[in-house]
Image 1 (tube, each protein chain N blue to C red):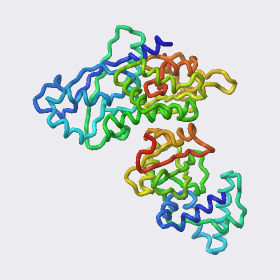
Image 2 (cartoon, rainbow over the protein chains, first blue to last red):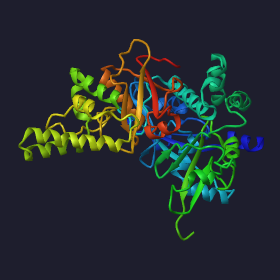
Image 3 (cartoon, rainbow over the protein chains, first blue to last red):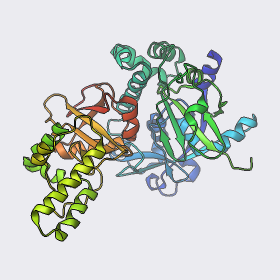
Image 4 (cartoon, chains in turn green, red):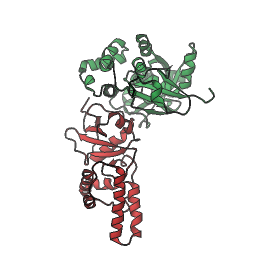
Amino acid sequence: MNAIRKLVWDGALNVEVTIDPELVIKGIPKNKTMVNLRIPRDSYIMNYLDYILTRLEAYIRVNLKDLKELNFWFEYDGIPLSWNYPTGVLYDIMNTKDVITAARDTNHLNMWRINLTCGSQVPRNVIPIIEGTKQIEKYWMHQWKQVCFILRGSSKQIMSISRKEGQSFWESILRRDMETFNNISTRIIPKKARFIPVVIHINDKFIQPVAPSLNDDGIENKVINITEGLSSSEIAIISHGVVIPKKSSLKEVYDRFLSFDGFLHLIIQEQPANT
Amino acid sequence: MSRLLESESGTDTEGDSGSNLSNSLSSTAATQLGRESPRNKNPALSLRNRLEQFSRRLSQLDLEDKPDQSGYNEKVVIPPEGSSSRRKSPDSIMHDDDKEPSTDKVKIKFQPIGSIPPMRPSVCKISGTQPFSMVLIFLQRRLKVDNIYCYVNNSFAPSPQQIVGELWRQFKVKDELIISYCGSVAFG
């Protein structure tokens, strides 16, 4: 289990970010308006905004301070990305076919090409960021409180974490400190949970089902049990870029594949009828 | 049920909530009433028909404590004609005193924290398919405040994109999703 957790924690994406041409000084070649970086799958893409803007500062028409007045968001293929999901989830939603191909071909190298866009108003599916990174941290903490409530029936366990520990918990994400993350998350996640925090992403929608860890007969629920009826076609279930066996125990999959926000994100890829 | 009807008559006296009540009354109920009134020239007959319709609708609600007919007759509020059109969300949030039974609507109980005004009535119904952001906008408009912070079960702030019906299914207490709200951060 630890080996899988380590692989999940270390999972990263090669991302090429191109900034909105409106922001760039005229005459600057396109290759200067791009930033290549490796982003952990288990992180919010918005955490890298300041880094990207700082890297491109020399080619941007306005001062960085003035940019704070604008709203930024990332887009893939013209579709705005909801920063409040882990970066790996966003990639898997947008590239499910590539995920399955990459799983079969170990020599496959992916580069995710996305755009950084700005405007006075954010698109509908994007939560506006008003308080900077502090807002992202608060959002993430409330996600964990929700997770704690689902797992334990109350948020007392996470409320009992000191402010200092809460800060270390968040910083473990930024510093990629798996040990600190595990130390605190294992205090929140019980060994036996009544319900599992799951988010299912299917056809541009997301569903947060009530997912009991045991069925009515006291037998462990399987992943397929919570995805049944979502699609009439044959489906593949993906988490962290990995195709999950449908008959795996839901709790076991959660323990191995939970994201840094405490949820198990499952991406459903509908298979064509002839495959 | 008597509580619901009392709440209904109570809100009718409040100037601000009067418009919301008429907006929130089911469009079918109001249009049916509106359509029937010209046909029934006898006002007594018209009133009886209306009361029978409400009675049928109430029986469909299948509530535990059914009111006695006389009490119901006294407290029923007939919406003014022309109030049938229901505004789109977030004003489509329905109060608990609305009569139309609907399977996709869920109950939300609002609890104020601190000095923010209480919601009257405190229990509302909302379409389960709406995102949580609609609840935030609804509260902002009803309470006429710029900032609102909402928490489920006094614990966590859900994402504005989360679907109200899913929150209700996962976190309901006695069939109600308990939302506490505050004008500033209450649970950081």
